[in-house]
Each structure stands twice: as C-alpha cells, then as structure tokens.
Image (tube, rainbow, N blue to C red; front, side):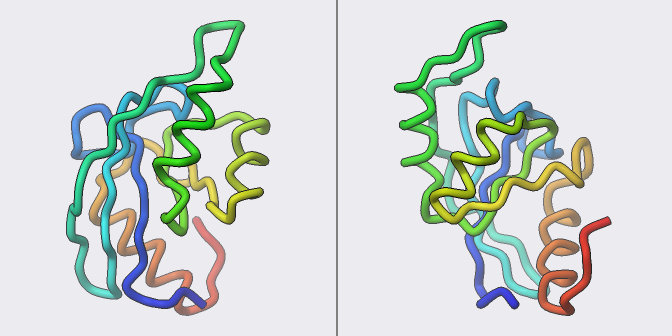
Length: 120
C-alpha cells in the first residue's frame, strides 16, 4: 500500500497527457498525489538519453538522480534496460496509462494501489 501523499514523475511533452517516451524526455513533471487530488510541484529538466541506436549513460545517471525521490515514473513507452535501472533505485516504471490524461491517470494509479488492485 502506498503511503500518501506520494510523489510521482510524468514524462509528458505538453503537460496534459502521459505522452513521452522515457528515453526522449527532456523534462519530468513532478506531482504530489493523494487519494483525491493531484498537485504539480515542479518540472525537472533532464538531458534525454536515447539517441536512436545509442544511449548516453551520463544522461541516464542525471535522469535517475532527478526522479529518485518519486515512487513511480509514468511514461508512454520505456525499454527493459531503463526499467531495471529504475527498479534498482526503488522507482516503478508505469506505461499502462500511455496517452491518457495525467491527473486522471495518477489518481487511478493511487486509488488502485491503495486498494491493492492490479493496474489496467
């Protein structure tokens, strides 16, 4: 069960939907979420690490540092390598809500987590 409030990171291009691939994100939107409210705390700028067939490991280290205080990161898409790196620092990668509205998705995630339900 999540301890509320929870801090969640979102990869979004425009701040309305979960619309960015983890490796292409240039910023993460950081929210504080309770069972019935989402509050945008800040945007954290990062260097995107995915460059087609190669990746920038120093950028990955910066991303991990930027979101290490979050319970989970919501993304449109993410690879297995980054999922493992996130898991190692205690951050869950969530792609189940790709292209959905941010607030509704975060509230649904928290509600399901509190109830012990699986994600959709």
